[in-house]
Image 1 (cartoon, rainbow, N blue to C red):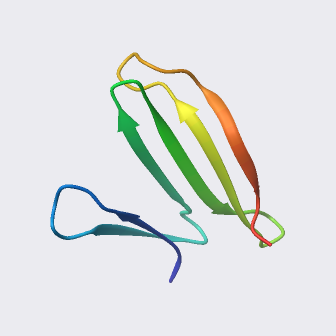
Image 2 (image 1 turned 90 degrees about the horizontal axis):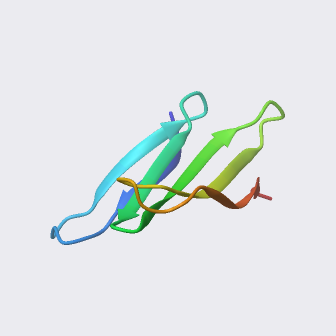
Length: 73
């Protein structure tokens, strides 16, 4: 059963989506020529929905830096 959902909007006329479960979590990446942003969502051992937003290199450009992480309240 899906616990998380990711949606993509862009040039196409329709949106694309992916589901993540409690077991699989969900990870998305949005990239440019200068780097990318990765968003991760998962369920921790206490059953809380957690998230992390990270700037990552992409095709040799950009840097790695955690922007934000926490628990959904």
